[in-house]
Image (cartoon, rainbow, N blue to C red; front, side):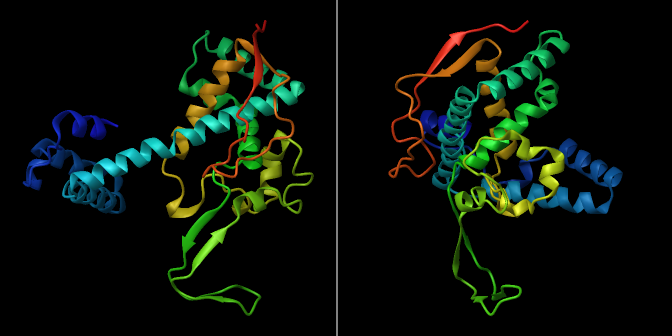
Length: 272
């Protein structure tokens, strides 16, 4: 967003052509020291990262602004919809809501009333609730990937030629009863450590997987958790007359969302 603001205010991005001026002598010396202390592997990695930054500055301002916009847009509606779907399911499942609120409030109280990053990471049941929300309502119902080389699917006569587009049906995987029995049921217990070990990791792909997975995954999860915590610590969520039960997905949206939006009753509450 800083890039977008700079482009809007100045009409251009400052990126002198002298790449050697990007890093001060102190920066270069610090990089060398980090490399020595971490070993050659990390020294090479750090060097590659620095080279990438230099090359990035050589890009024209349209590409830079476009990339900044994509970072902003990709994490906006997806995160807000996940929060909405989570609150919707908690409204339908009051016992799960109560258990989640109890954990949230207990952890915050143990931290002296402060909501810190470490406190959020301690909320294991909240993490399970959000994982189940992303399982049932993946932000992107499918992924598209390009086959880089000829690939023979194991135990079959099917070969994927290089250049072929492959569609990964995320929603289908997340609702396959072979992996998730009774898939329409909202059940956070699917994501206990023990239950996760029984499934192939690629049957759960809300952020994709591998080197091209969602670059904003950690930030998105933290953002979603903070949103849910803000609601649960002081409010109770219930279904209302306008609530859509069951959900009817929008056919016009590129991301998973409800056709009629989300209508819930939110009332003040306290946990002692």
